[in-house]
Length: 289
Figure 1 (cartoon, rainbow, N blue to C red):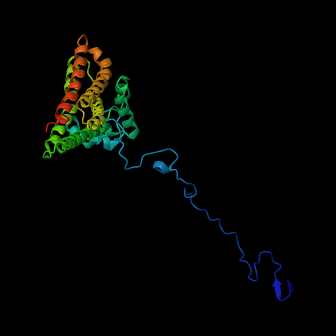
Figure 2: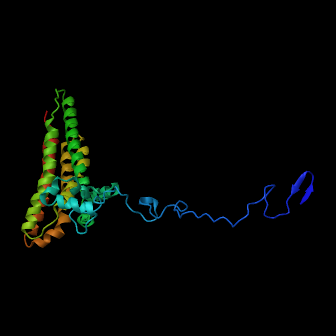
Figure 3: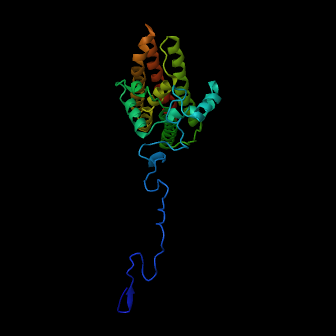
């Protein structure tokens, strides 16, 4: 043992400090169980945390899949289908989800197609995903725009002639009945006619086509504020022609399969759409003081 400066050191290499080391075999090595805490994300991760996207366990996988289509989803989806088969599906919210599965860019693109009626590519672009979201809001917007503009035009006309003016609530009622009824029952009637002539078309796609065809009447209604009668007739005629052409051109290629009477069907579609424009002008924008 060595000493110096008041400190001492042991010559034994197994000693640590001034306390002798315990003699005996080496203690067993401690092993930690494998854990995935050192790797992130864990291999069992779900959803967008993991490398490959997997929907979370509470995701509704039926939202982006066509109801009543071919391949089924999970076990719960199959149970819902079994419990809501047949006509009972129309009372289920899930039955209508696929027809509202659109975003802003889709709706804007389809509105843009309706403004340029001679392209004739609307039915082709919407064949895989016809929607009811755009038609519903287009029709609803037109109802309130037409009623409010007609009310405003009537008010200005009465004030100009210094006559008493009373608000007519029936404008909203008749506007809702006219446009909702037209966009619902006219495509339904056309669906039955095309099925009779062995040229069936999808009912939802017809509703989609007719709904977007009404968009052109929204700017036409706004332009009808101009207090010039001939100008209002021109606006109504141009809007009716564009809307009728949009519907007829997009259905022509499909209706040709109906045989020799396809021209009568297309002509009827065209004239009916023009009639809607005339009715819009006569009822909403013909001012009498």
